[in-house]
Figure 1: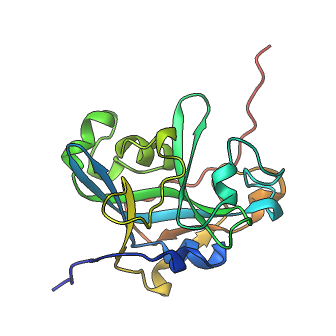
Figure 2 (figure 1 turned 90 degrees about the vertical axis):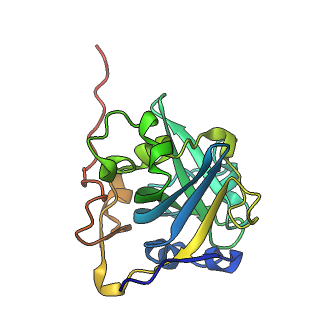
Figure 3 (figure 1 turned 135 degrees about the vertical axis):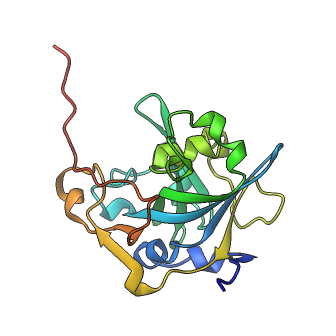
Length: 213
């Protein structure tokens, strides 16, 4: 018999560690999105680590801006950004305040409230695809810039929280290059996923965007 996942909220000390420790340790944890229609719970199956101003692939590489300010704040907060003029993506800030490190939530399995997400993900062929990719995850859970800076350690009143779940054994964790990251940042093997999990998104190397003539 498989034990039920632990629903205890993760403390801030969980996030107040180096990003390369936090990222793989997030696999199997549960992200809960509280909505007026009810909660949506997602088991994290794929993440990516970004190491702040020391990481060419990070939004914080060139310093603090209005867009990435939350990354420089205390750990245990959501950093939500808007990309390509159409998609949102969610990260969890970790490490000491001021280091601007964060973990991108790339994919997960919706284990509660799937009926609340399907109308936002009409292109998903089945429930395994509801949150298969960072933009799909944010869309399914109705996460946008209004949630940027949300304290995921604030307790049941927070619209976003992270529960203990069921940590993944080390022999089931895989890692490799981050998806779509170019240049020096593209070689860091800081993408982590659960082996053979059907909700994990496919790896895609960076492809330069063509300028319109």
